[in-house]
Image (tube, rainbow, N blue to C red; front, side):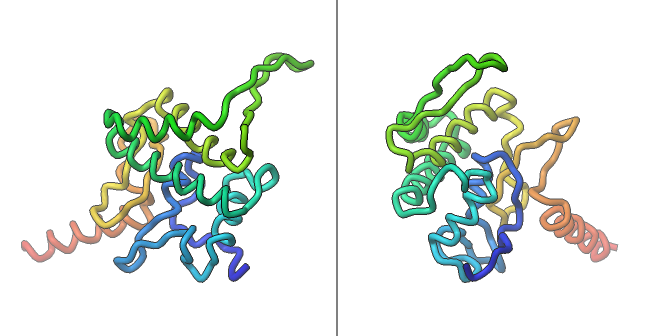
Length: 187
């Protein structure tokens, strides 16, 4: 692999948003982890994402998995942008059609186990299923960064629900600096 360092500026979000965040802006240009960002091949980017999402031990970094993830990423992007759009919801449902939850009882009690007709759909289905969990927890907490030049998404876990930036260190600081500069020019 060209690099083992994840080049994305925001990682660690819930898996649905982490998949959306495989596209980001750098120096005014859209970067895509699955399309050669940071000198990675498509498969290296996929392997890196599977690893960071905790899925590398269960799913392969291969062409079918990538194709299904790109389908899921588009469905997620459209559903997050407009949760009431019937076409976006139909795309999301189409991804969800490729898996299901099997309920089991074991020594430790009830358990849920995902099943897939085609394992290559596993990561895509897992991300789509995670969006349903986020919508249950708080649809208003799924946010796009407030910076007009940022395309990243996050799940606001702040106590009062007022987080605006993907990262205070990046977009938040730029906004604060711009406000400070504008106040200085007005005086």
